[in-house]
Image (cartoon, rainbow, N blue to C red; front, side):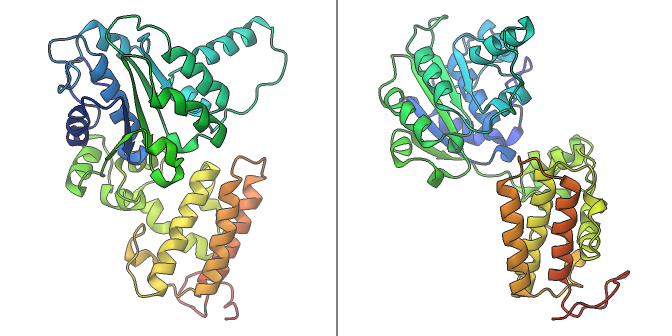
Amino acid sequence: MVVGHDGKLPLPWLQATLDAAMAQARAHALLLRGSADVGALEAAVVLAQSWLCEGGQGGAMRIACGRCEACHLVQAKSHPDLLLLLTEEMRQQHGWLMALDKAANAASSSGDDDKPRKKASRQIRIDEVRWCNEWASKTSSRGRAKVVVLHPADVLNVQASNALLKTLEEPSPGVRFVLTTADADALLPTVRSRCQMLSMPAPDAATALAWLRERGVEGGAVLLAAAGERPLLALSLHAAGVSAQVWAELPLAVARGDAKVLSGWPLPRAIDALLRLCHDLARQAVGGAPRFFPAAAIQIFSADAHALDAWRQSLLRASRHDGHAWNEGLLLESLCAQGAMAMDSGNTAVPGRRATLPA
């Protein structure tokens, strides 16, 4: 996630985005518009590391050296002038804890907090933003700068966004912000207007596939398409055991109503895969080419557009409440059964089909 001791970027395709960001030397707040699965968080952290770098390579227009004491502190996730304002879920996942987390952990371990632990939040909450504002108002510990990385900014609720505005508009001297978002329209206009926006494109296919091959990913082209050309998501699919073959066989399994193919998948990932299948079937229904699945995997189906739309609405409802205490097995069986009905429009070419559903 950071520039290491060897001075190399964590993701090779970040160079152009970072060069453009470093050229914005006078901007106190940058908004990186790009997907997390393309490396938005990595780009934001490297940018913060570069602003804090104390080595000869660091500077207004240079990427972090990776070797100075400040870079070592960032690598150890302990730089006193760097704050990663993430959701609680992401802070736990990446190990970037705030003082709020450390205080809560201390209370829990000492027995002071007898309440059951709540599920980690997927929002950046107003109390966290207020703590960030207080942190940003204090003097830099190392005298170079203070940097807040806010990822992703689109999970700020309205109250948290409003709490951030004053500090974002008039920060203390030496304080800089870098925000990320996959959807700038999801932010309050007042937040967007206080930032210099910079788009972060996905890498070209050749670069992404070479990067995946270096990490031992076989069938990278299929997984990269499955991930919507987002290489970090493709790598995550591979790490979770989703091979190119498993992905290509998913449509046929769903057409049979077989939810076992999704057994062991986290519920959000399973629903996302079904949404991608529904999307490709809808594209095919109007004469378009599939985006996420190999054409050979879905071309035997001729799904009804109305049935696909009803299935899509069910999937979207489930995705909005994927943190609910579902019986996941029953939910996926229901969604796959509805998918099987949507994919059946008198097509008898599917092996194992018990009967043809009415049109």
